[in-house]
Image (cartoon, rainbow, N blue to C red; front, top):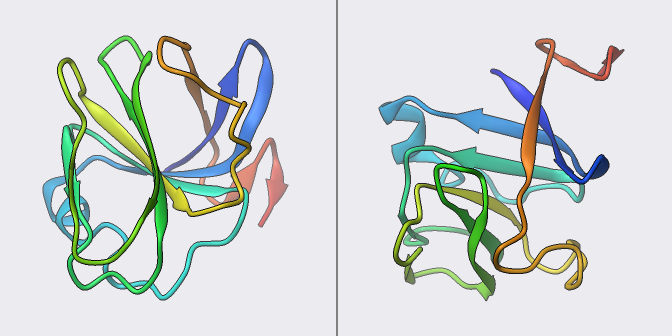
Length: 126
């Protein structure tokens, strides 16, 4: 699985972001998990809406456009919900609810995903 680090203005926001870009993996997403650890996220692209049917935990969402600008932030999404990213949304970051700082991102912020080597974060083996 490919991973990346989420960065804004040179500051690391999320240490491990799983890059989920193929159809089969996007369809499964977080459905087969009972949790997602802090400092981890899943990036789904393309993906302008999500559902949480059959999910086992609450998540926070950050929708992004093609230029990696935040278009919408939705917190504490419980199981059994559908969430639309809104106009211009192209991808989404999914994180376990509650650990990502409220003031870390706002609509309009630009972020980037810096890919890491398989199984490493900045060269440190996981």
